[in-house]
Length: 304
Length: 304
Image 1 (tube, helix red, strand yellow):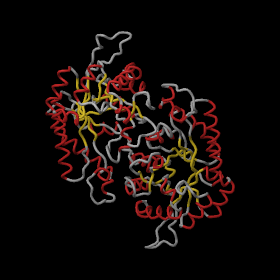
Image 2 (cartoon, chains in turn cyan, green):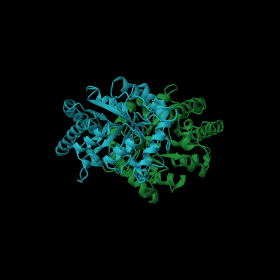
Image 3 (cartoon, one colour):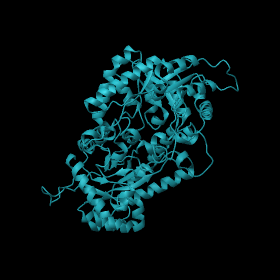
Image 4 (cartoon, chains in turn blue, cyan):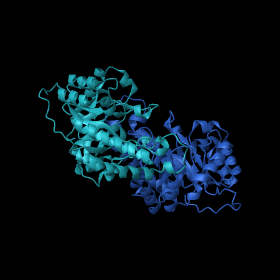
């Protein structure tokens, strides 16, 4: 979403400007949706990014109410996707689930549904006899994603919701997302209106991409830059690579540079901090939110 | 290298055609260079890809002699590179080491030196106080690689050796190679003659790349496709991701498709099997070579 956030009225030399900082609920995994909302408000944050499991737990209408009552923006809903099944039952189930996500987003008051599109059937499908060749066909899997995005577009448009394609780090190409670069996502989005299919820049997933600067600029030019999510690339890689995300500054990502590119592309929306990391999950939520606000203030905010 | 290999004279319906299969010595890590040569000959292979540590162990001249006496081709020498140091001493040491690799390749009778270009100074440099920002500058690190390739080109050309840029999987962008895609390598090679700067397609590193087909075709068109290395992408990722390589067929890579692209690009050289994998290293070398020949015969050779 593109919100031109006013500078917090209390902002001064010593008060950090958190007026575009959003807490993604995955970062404080131990918190319920309500606790995350309370924690965000207490820390002076204006927005939250919500995961569907937390919303389901609290109930959809109640979640919307909690966020509204707290006066927070919902920067995105995570997530739709998983569109690569190569059988009819899998395709139908995925489309139905994505339509549900679209309705949830509209109800929660966000226009942005983050789409993690799914991996190869060979790596993600039901337990069935191996079919050598066919279910490792990456080109075909990408084709199915394109087709199913096309099928979802009218429903998303009716609900005023944007399907936000997320390129995932190539380490996840087999089992989680056959979309691996921002350029590839923009190519897939191209046939559709910018207000219905967008892209997200998540630093963890795209920091290595040699075309990153030009593709961020293109996303801005095309009006598709729907979300900016930040966290660091930690090494050594965690046993589950999903959990190798860290606080900005703890890994190897050059946040000032990438943030400048995002700003130059005209992005004026919220900046979500989304970290999966067992050690951070084990720490008290308020401490996590305080650290993320500090790192944002040091490494991201000055370059926005 | 581009060798038009004759079909083995013994080839028939039941005899596999191994006339383009090369054993990279990293695959049989427990073997000395001499053992690898003996093993390759015993299995009917016409070529080996050599690692410099094994060559150093046996001695350069003696290694050359062993390979020559066995009648094998040397499909490549692994490896030069590690060019990203941001200090003068690091730069000088790297250039010196790469000139040594070039001389070794010429002595061993291969024109192809595989270049793993190195990672961020923040992840690879000597133990020194952290310098936030500067040494995570990926754009600058890539610029240093480009400059140093330029410095090495005349020396390589004098020796009839080609610097073969290797894109590494983005999982290694921080600590091992700031070149992450084939297209990026081709862009970096562009200022130089095709016989002096080339690229390698290693399936493990590039299988996920949405631009793979077009960039392989481009590499062929530009005469820069210097080596084709095959192994699979295994999951779950090994604790050391370097060791997550597997026999073709054990992971998620679509070998028929990628091999077809390589063939369509006009590649007529050897196909090296290069696997780092603890379990495979712990098995007897002859068994490893037999399995790699079987998998090559099933998943690669028919599509060349």
